[in-house]
Every structure is written in C-alpha cells, then in structure tokens.
Image (tube, rainbow, N blue to C red; front, side, top):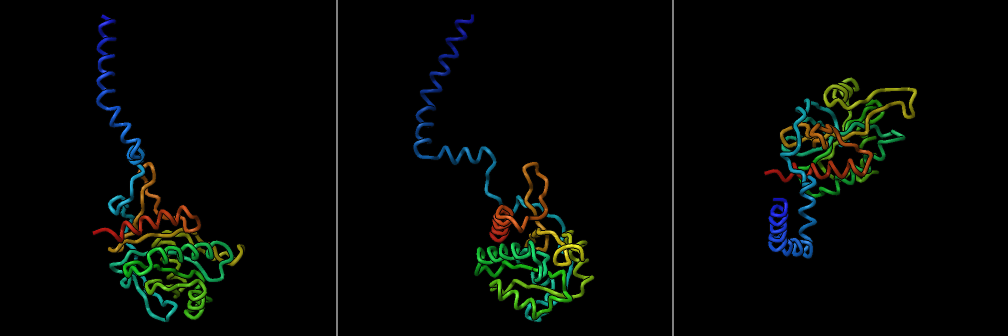
Amino acid sequence: MKSKSYIVIGFVVLVFGIIFIPEIVDRISSGSVVDQDRHSIGAKKVTADDLLKMGQVPSFKFVDQNNDTISNKDYEGKVFVVEFFFTTCPSICPIMNANMIKLQNRFKGNEDFGIASFTINPEYDTPEVLKKYADEYGVTNPNWHLMTGDMSQVYKLSNTGFNLYAEENENVNGGFEHSGLFALVDREGYIRSRPDEFGNPIVYYDGTTDEGVKMIAEDIAALLNKE
C-alpha cells in the first residue's frame, strides 16, 4: 500500500512540474512574480476607502496671515492638513513646517489641497508676524492659512477639538509645548486616519519624521483622487 501511495504522490509531483514550472520560470523572467509577492504580504496601495473616519472637525474662526477671517467653511470641499505651532518655537516647529512645505510642493497646483496652521502663542503671533514667517518659509499655497486669535479658543480647538496637545509651560524652552503631529481632514470635514498593521487607527501622523510625511502624503493623494 505504501509503495502505491509513493507512486501516486510521485505522479502528482511530475504533473505539477510539467504544468506549472514553465509558468513560474516565465514569471520570474518577466519580473511579475515580484509584484505578486508584494501583494501577498499586504503591501497594497492605500485608497480612500482604507482610511478610517475619526470624527468631524469642530467649527473655528480665526484671522490668518493676510488679515482675512478664515473658518472651517473655507476648507469645505478640500483635503487639508492641520497643525499647531508657534513662530518662535526653538525645537520641532521648524521641522514640522519644513515638512509642510514638502507637502505644499508635492501637491502644488491642486486647488483642492490646503493646510491649516494654528499658532498656540497668539499674543505674539499677530497676522503681521505670521505673514513674515510664511514668507520666510516659502508659503505659496493660497489655501495655507496661518491663523491667530483668542488664546482660549485656540487651546480649546487644539486640546478638545483635535485632541492635539498644546500648553503653556514656562519651564520649557520657548515657553510652550505641543505635539509634533499632523491631522488629516477629508473633503467632508472628517478627520481621517490609516489603520496600523492590526487594524487600529494611527489617528495622527508624525510631522517631524520622513516616514510620517510619506504616509500622510500617500493618504492625501488617496483622498484627492477619490471620485
């Protein structure tokens, strides 16, 4: 009985080889096997449908670097990125805004892409100060508004509205502390997030790292390309 089983197994292996090995060789030669391997490990392109909805953006109204009054309604129909910063920040803000410039340039000419930057030091960061800061960094996107206003409203928006930490702290360099995270918002005003490898939302994107910028750029593109 064992000898018959071995004969059957051997026959199956032989048939498999005759049918499939030439196809496998062709795929290796053409390079298509590499593409299939990528799909098999889940390295697929992110689509808008992959991005999780984390809640709607709260309403806001502030004044920007051009002395224009800007509200959440000015971003309706646009995909935009949100950050909290201050112009005299000696640590992470220069990195964050250098990365924002990369995003601006990546989507240059796309009228449906915007950026909302809220200062957490509004007493110093007047529209005039924000205008100079914007010019120094090379802000050219007309939908990039650097906004200032009532401090209590800014902190309410940051800590409660977006859950992006910001606080005065005289014991830290610069007098303020905040997260270096970016929030991504879709055309309908929903905060969006890609899931991690376990399906849990990352919620925000690290605005201080190349990897965080790469991820949010991919997800911006996915939302902009959504029909």
